[in-house]
Image (cartoon, rainbow, N blue to C red; front, side, top):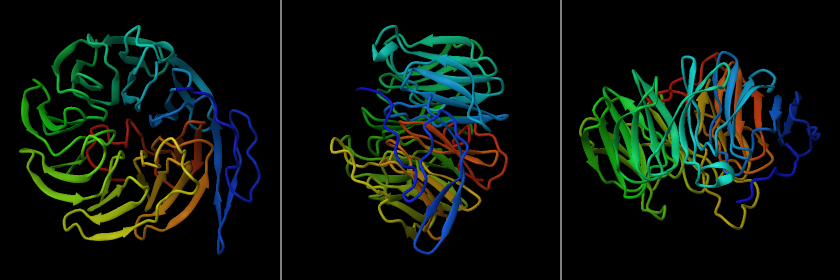
Length: 403
């Protein structure tokens, strides 16, 4: 696929155009029929771009680490200004870098310019300089996908072809490997177990985190980009048929894999958000559903969050995994609109049109929300606590989504 820069578009209807420079610091105004909202766009960085730019920018100590599939790089950026600190080649990085102390872990999906050779690498980079500390090449030449998870001396990576690897986080040497087929999501960890859900052949797994031994294996369906989430001794996983139909969100006993609950017909490519006894599930058509996690009582649902006709080459699916802070859910539709949604009511507080299609999920840190699409990386000023964001969906073990 061609991965060029998208044409610049208006950020908001009825407002001024953002100047086409790499970094800009402006305030954008959104108008509704009854209210004015101040939505301060702090900056945008156009060096971070590319079709299907899926990886969330992660954050620590005032620095963002952001994949850019458009130019086969990972960037370290000043979170306050968007300025580039360093850049390192990481070819077609398809997931969020994982931050562990002074190291970030990333994976490649292909060779240079999308070619299969040289083989894709799992990599550890120095967080300060971007220099490579080690790399590991998968012997079967399969792509590294998902955001890695670090626990103790291990870093867990998933592959689009041969399942899951546990690597020594210091030197990259393989400790164990489970060849379970194609996986396109991130793993989760809890109580000495690593959880993963496979795409082809379909299956849900729990492995001993130290030895790789299978603890349980069930087949509730095929999972794609939606990653498992651990919440109060359960594993939450979206699964369906290989054609992405008959989709449901399953709540499994983390010890046995047996189904406890199911949100039938709810789910998609996105990872659900779980917070304070509530679960928020984006569906295939851009509707977000909110339920009581235990009783499965529906609390609210949004309208389809699509504001312009989708590309005729594909349906308008939901890839963004929403995040929540201070009672506000942040979510990006594939059609390019960024939303702030009230956690209690599901009503849109504000929304803004971004240039390009929106595959990426938000991250929140240091009073800002960051969002990537195929055109640029954007930073907005929001009300939030000062926190780190070490991997996809924040918690570096995928254990719930508390503020």
